[in-house]
Image 1 (tube, rainbow, N blue to C red):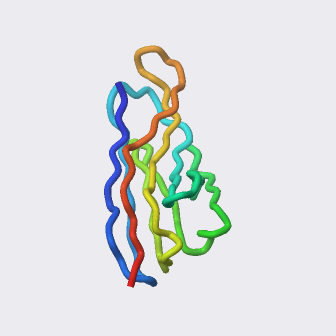
Image 2 (image 1 turned 90 degrees about the horizontal axis):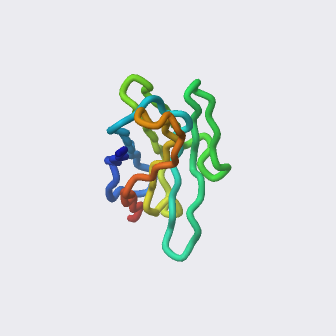
Length: 121
């Protein structure tokens, strides 16, 4: 079994920063792509940022220049540094990882439980 555990959400004022973390644990051979998604009330889940195992990154237009995704392959972890937060960034943020199982050597998609980020004055 594989688990994704997120942390770092909270309530901040506009212009402030937060750093989200996500660590994968369990029967893992390797972790391929790792992404952050978010879902605001009444809206569909959307991709915020993604990073490949090799470190190539991609961002939603709405967060470019404000958010930075990074990862530590040795720790099976991914991070999202969020600066200059805006009320529109308020959402539940989910970690996603594409993981090769140590048991079966097959690739599966895993999601974290989500962490709430609220930006409000």
